[in-house]
Length: 349
Image (cartoon, rainbow, N blue to C red; front, side, top):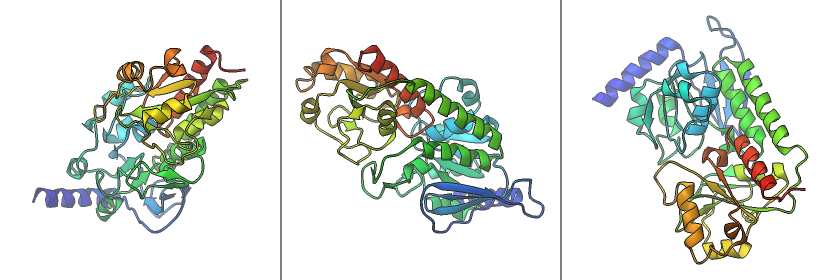
C-alpha cells in the first residue's frame, strides 16, 4: 500500500510540474536540442538522445536525485545543490570546493539505495554515471522510472562505444575521450537551464588539461592502474578513464592490450609487465578489500609476487581518487596528478 501511495503521490506531483519522459530507440551517447511549447518555460522542452533513448524534459528539474558520485559532482559544480533532493553511491569524499554545497543535500546511501528510497524523494529527474545503476540488478531499470513519468539520464561516457551486456564492468570498442564527459556536462546544464554555467565548466576543464600536459613527453613511461581488490585486482584496460589520462600524457598502460574496462588480472602477470609507475585508487568505500591506498601499498610491499617490482622498490606511486579513475570531471584531476608524479619521478622528457 505504501508503494502504491508513493506512486500516486509522485504521479500527481509530476503531472503538476509537467515533467514528461518519452523513451524510444536510439544510439550513441547524448545530444540535445531545445524547443518551446505553449505555456512552457523559455527553452523547454529539452530533448536528449541518451544511451539508446530519447528523453524529453518539459521543465527544469527541482527535485533531482543523482545516483552516482560522478553525476552528483557535475550537478554540484553547476551550482545546482538547491535542485537536488538527494544523492547516493559514493567512493570518495566530495570534490574539493564542493563541500558546502554537498552538505546541504541529503545522502540516501553510500552505495546503491533501493528504488523505494529514491521514489520517497518524489524525484522529477534521476541521473546516474553508469548504465548498471539504472539497469537490471541496480537501483531500478530506467523503464520503472519512466512508467512514473520520471526522466532518467546516464552518462554518455558509459555507453559510447561500450558494451555493458556482460557480467563485468563492460568493454570498449574504441578509446574513450573527454568529449563524452564534456557532453554530459553540456547535457545536464541544458536540462536544468544553466547552459552558460555548463560552457564555463567545460572551458575550465579543458584549460586544466592543457596546463597539466604542456610540454610533457612521457612516451618512455609505463603505467598500471589499480582500482580495488587485493586478491583478484581490478586493473585498468586500454580505453576507459585511465586511457584518457595515459593518452593525454603520451605514456603507455601495460594492459593496453585488453579492451575490458576493469579486468581482474593475477599479480604474477602484473609483475611480468613490471610497470614504471603504479597509479593507485585511494577509495574510502568498504565494498572491496584494499580500498584505501595505504592498504594497497602495504600489500604491494609484502606480497612475494609484487614486492620486487621496480615501481614498488622505487616507491613510484601516484594516488588518485576513485572518481578520477572513472569517466568524470575528476578525470582531469587524474591527468594533473599523474603528470606531476611522472615529472617528480624523472620519467618525462
